[in-house]
Length: 185
Image 1 (cartoon, rainbow, N blue to C red):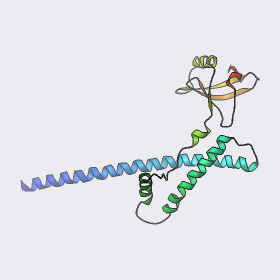
Image 2 (tube, helix red, strand yellow):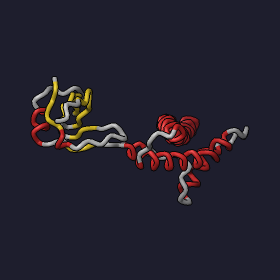
Image 3 (cartoon, rainbow, N blue to C red):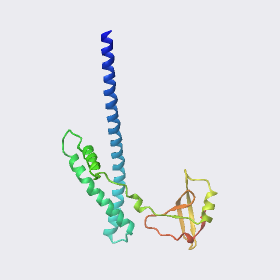
């Protein structure tokens, strides 16, 4: 009987260690997932920033929003450089997670931020257009893709409208919503 009790105690201790190690793995997996998501977003933002920089170098007009986006993205890239440099050092200790945790503790964030909202450009549609859009079947969950006719005769093709009322514009596009005459089939 004594051996059975000691086996049970050993098993309980092993279960505690096992659950502790599992919680560490779960946190590590979440951290890795967060870093992967941030890396994907950062890649998209870097492409956008390069396009803006290319426009500037060509002498094309660049909006204030695009300039602000480029500035914020440049800060992110500078923030990431220490992590990239350290990741090249062949040390078996996972330095990157330690740096991120220490940075958060002392108020410095090594991880990039999402700046795509800077380029977001949207406007509220007039109520008459909202009512027309509400009558249409949704293209997807909570949005419509429509063609809008302007009073000038110009047609805005394949435009996304969120919740029947919010028109998503291109980053540098400016439209007076009073110039929208109606929907085009």
